[in-house]
Structure formats: structure tokens, C-alpha cells
Length: 439
Ligand code: 5AD
Ligand code: SF4
Image 1 (cartoon, rainbow, N blue to C red):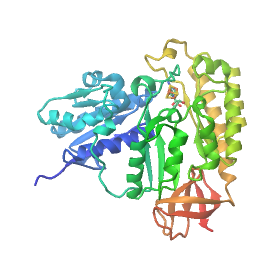
Image 2: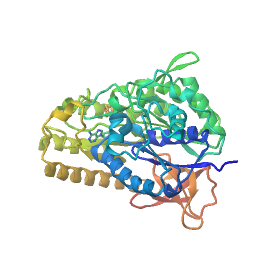
Image 3: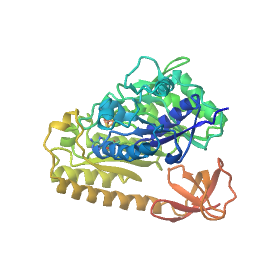
Image 4: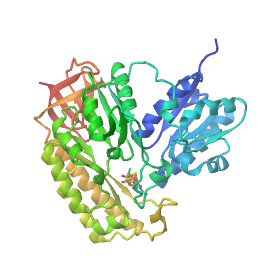
């Protein structure tokens, strides 16, 4: 018997890439590959890349430069680029870095096994199609190995919103939903293998419309069906667009106990002028009213968001409007980014804000967000929360997991098992986590 080949996957960017990397590793299992966590030991290295900001894309090329050196000592090493940089740049990647053997876009990775065969023949392989067929239907059945208690499950891909700054509609294509029946099958399979919490993924997940047994199913409908799956204790979903938060989805937050009280709902800016220029098709006011309705359905919900500062034409007054919106919402988590020009997007042609001004704004916004994050964490002290235990901590008797609000929690003096949902009381708050004791 020949020894299995080793595959090392480095994942950049969003949670969907984490999911895609798992599925690619499984697909390569059929080609005789097992995963390794050591790049130096690998026969094939796959970079699953992100194109959302320039920095993310450039990181890939510096990593490829390092890998070229590794390949000089190990000529049989195969190097592949997957994900959104692969989609956006295609064969340009091989031109810029000839050490690359394989380029595969996020919609065609079910073809990886066939592409790997080409590499065996000493050829290179490139596939950045948006094929008609559903890649998930062409991927091999997932192996029945035991899984960690929290898993991602992609239910929707692509985006039709075309925000003026964003590459996603070009790299991931038009909105497509997986059939509800398939999603439910995959969820049941994950639960059988030890999963207790599923995060439903989509670039625009709340626009989900999938075919079920009795017709079209919305995200709220899918969540209600998933809540009936025995052993599935927790459901989350990300990422959502404000315009697709329908009444039933809001109601589900109050009605479905399995749906966790945490919601990532990016707004990007608090200025109507900038929102319009971003092609967001909602206002700051409509977003705030939406949050009011969500909080009415689920008062303890922790909100999360994304912001871009220094978008073309952003004035001091526009930025102050963003700060004001953040003060009103008081996010438990928020992610803020300096605007990055993405070639091919409508905003790419517009004049940039002075980079120093953009940097200063980013710092101010991040300071405010951090302050709120700490306050929201502090407000948890003394409260009873439930924690899905994911692994043992570094110190004896310590177990780590996530609360329903997605806070990282370390439980001291714990005899809880991985996969258990522990009732604990929060006793302290550190920078990025909470400390707890069993009730
Ligand atoms: N520049 C900066 N941030 C961006 N994002 C998307 N495109 C860009 C860009 N061109 C941010 C948005 C989005 C998050 C995933 O990344 O805030 O919600
Ligand atoms: Fe990009 Fe999200 Fe806008 Fe779609 S809704 S274009 S993924 S920022």
C-alpha cells in the first residue's frame, strides 16, 4: 500500500472559506490525501484565498513567494490557489508566480479531484467557471468522522446587491440557494457526528430561498425546520443584509429557542449620503428602526456589524453620523475596515479620502467599538449563561466554549465534557473572553 499524500490548506478570509476548505480536504481524501497541519511536510499546499480587500489579496502573493522557495527544495510539491483571488485573477496568478500548479475558483472546487489527476500527468490545471451543476451535489459524501461540536454549513452563495465597494458579486457570482432538503440532510448528518451548533452561511444568507418538500423555503422556514432536528441545540446564521430581514425572520428570533441571540447585520456607514453612494438601498434611520424591531422580538440579542471608513467622498460629518449610529446601537462586536479600492467595482473610479484622515477615523471608530464591546462583556458579569463546551483550556480543570451571545467563555474548575451545554455564571471579563463558574 502506498503511504497517503499530505495536504496542507491555509485558509484566509471569511467563514465560508473555512467551510470550503473542509469540503476541499474531503474531496482530496478520495485522491489519497490526508490533511497535515505542517506545510513543510506537505505534498500539496492549497491557499484558500480572500479578495475582499487589497491587503488580503496581496498576502497571497507574499505567501506564494515563500512557497516557491519551499518548492525549490522539494520539486514534487504541488501548489494550488483556491477561493476568491483564484476567481478574480485566474491565470494571472500563474503568470505572476509560475510555481503555482493549480488555480480553482470557489464555484468549481468539486472538480479538484480531476484537476489533481492533471497534475499527476505533469500538467497545470485552471478552473474558474461558474458551472451549471451544483458543486455540493458533485462532492463526495462527507466521511462519517466525529466532528467538533460547532460547525458551519453553507446554504447560500453569491450576492445580487452590488454594493459599490464590494467584489463578492463578481467573485462568488449571483445569489444561489441550496435546496432546503439537502441542507436538512447535511445538518442531520453533522448532528449524528457530534455537532450541536450549526452556523448557516451565505454571503447574503437572509435572502435564502431554497426548494423544500412542500415548495419554497425562506431562511426563517429553514431555521424552524432545523430547530426540529433532534440533538441540534443551537442555530446561528451569517451574513445578513438589512433589506432581507423579513417579518418572519424577526419573529423567529423571539419564537425559536434554538436560534441564538446574536445577529451580525452590517450597515457599513451611518450617513445616508454615503449609504446612497455605496448603493446600499437603505438609510441609517431604516436600519435603526429594524434593530428596534429585532430587539422587541428578542430583547437580549447582541448585535454585531461591519463598517467601512474613508469611503470616497466621506466627509467629517458623514463620519460623525457613523459614530452616532454606533453609539445608538451599541454593538457587542463590530468590525471596521479602511476602504480599499477593488478594481472592477463602481467605487474604484472615485477619488480617495486622504489616507491619514481615513486612518484617524478608523482609530476613533475602533476605540468606540472596543469601549462598547467591553461594556457589553462587563454587563454579562453575574449573569447565568449557557456555554457549548468546545475544548479543554490550557490550565487544569479549565474548559472553553461559546455562550449563546457568541462570547468566548472559559469555565474554571469544570468537569464539563466537550459537546455539553453547561449552565454557568459569568464572574469576570477579560479583553476578548469571559470567565465563568458552574452554577
Ligand atoms: N474595502 C473595505 N472593506 C470592505 N468590505 C467589503 N469590501 C470592502 C472594501 N472594498 C468589508 C465590508 C463587508 C466586510 C466583509 O468587508 O464591511 O461587510
Ligand atoms: Fe458585498 Fe455584502 Fe454588499 Fe453583497 S451585500 S455586495 S456581499 S457588502
